[in-house]
Length: 159
Image 1 (cartoon, one colour):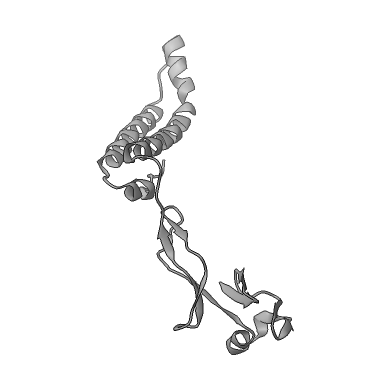
Image 2 (cartoon, rainbow, N blue to C red; image 1 turned 45 degrees about the vertical axis):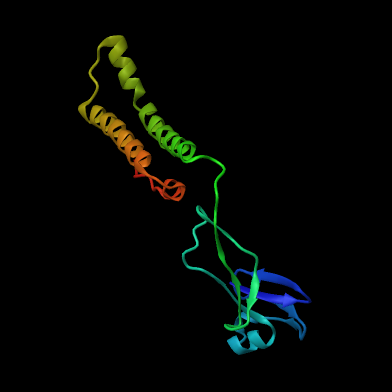
């Protein structure tokens, strides 16, 4: 990422823009400019900590780091209004919703079994059992977590 300070207003670019305006004027075909020419025009790197994870961080205000001659945005740990138990319940319910969607795809086998006593194929029954087991495992693992950040960062297994 790149940024430039124009009269006290910092503009952020995802990379070197095709063109930009600085105190020196308009710069066209900027991607072909040398790194030194970009700096001379006032376009500098914007550094964001590599540990940034939008699930648990926000970014602070942009500022100029004189020592390193770059713009920076520091990580700020998020806080959550929900209690630890509320976050756990929310994450567990989210996963259970996915499991229920997967189970719904084969519910017709169960209905057919109930209505006509037709057998449920063993692979379907195994899949359904595995989904329920996985759901219980996820619930146990989430409930064992002790910090909000851990709950938010918990990665669900693929189903």
